[in-house]
Length: 607
Image 1: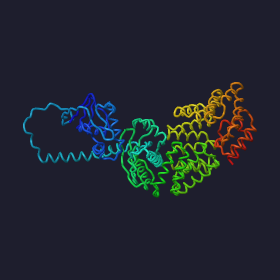
Image 2: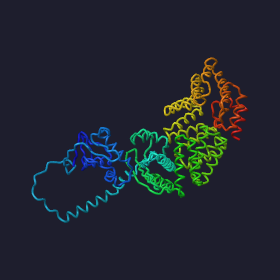
Image 3: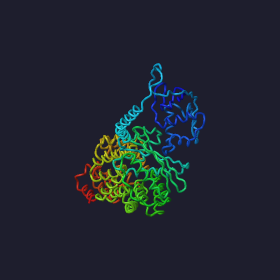
């Protein structure tokens, strides 16, 4: 049967769509969906019926149906708001509404030639002749079978997947308050897949940015530069969890695998392991079998996922509270300790507490996580990071940071924190290499893009640093954290007007109590050195943070007040200002690197 509507024809015998006389390329599942809707035209076809008719051979999420409907609309140039062909009935299903004419398709698909006059009854074929033809067919089939098997194997084992992105799992519970649970489970699946060697798994930040843009899957894959996409859904009902996932080869837009996994909430870690193992197998990769993990307390796991959710929202106080709650419920929950350590580290950046108050707690939490789970990559990364910026324990820091990367080779945070270590020990080019690796893993992250710019600045590559910082500025409007580094870069380029302009913007954001108009007047009337002297006086009059002493010190370096500068650098070391760990490569110290006081500072950090 051929179905004709508008300028289209759908031939169910040849299984093809034709528009204006020309064949149209369309996914088999989408074409099967179109045929089923046309065959049932005029009536509401409910979603469960479509799943049974089109995806009976695979367990897929509702997103597969939505995606196929979207593909049909695009192919047919249909509009969901004013449909001509496919009408959406909210929450129920779809209806094909166009007028359709039907014709019988020819039985053969080959070209029909005129037939010769019938000469009479065909001669009877002898039994021997029939047997000979039968034997010949078997021999030909046997000869062709190896080639056929080779061809199928070649097609089924295409180029191995070397990179993928996990789209946020759809929350199918119908309860918006469960979004944190779907987000957290997505994070954990990414973490599990990140253990696969030789596979680049794009980090959460970039995937969420692409998902929110509502682009088609092939375009998302191109933007993230990945071979494959994992998408799926999750439902939690009572103490049961159901995860549905599918793997799509973005290079061919072909569905490689789909499956559902269901189990009790206490067995959620095993469900995640099963999903990751199946994806690895379908991607022609090897994921080492997970070590047996004890059942997780569902309440502790829920609190842990809330901690992750708040952390991604940069709500550090609530993140800390949730991780602490998870630990109280289950004192043997390694991931909760690792998350708590990470949040404590971030709390110092957000000014929630001083390094002396928070870092010892973070160290203890990271070490406890490793004690409970020696395969926890996040815990090793966090331990190494704290040993870099707080303890200055360089040997142990590198061991733990590299161990973290080995356990989680697709963790952009691990690469980020190892790059900070490499700068601290005076290996700026290696730091740039690892930050570029972090950018590959998280290309749309504002923080990663900005840190690559900072790393290039510390490597004295000012033009590249400027371009990278400006690229980060296009991603998010964060004037303080951007302008601070733009000021430093312009200073090294000798463009003092630009340097002062951006420094004043950063001061307005971070120290609003300072009268920036007075500082600008000092610069315009008396020049560069007068500006930094006035700035130092303003800083001395404000409340001191852990890095205020560092700021005053570098301001004094600019005006050659060396004794005063090094006194404040000693104070900055006492308060464990993280910038002091980077003085080996900090361009602001270039003018004093050969002096004895700089050597004394360095000796204190690298003893």
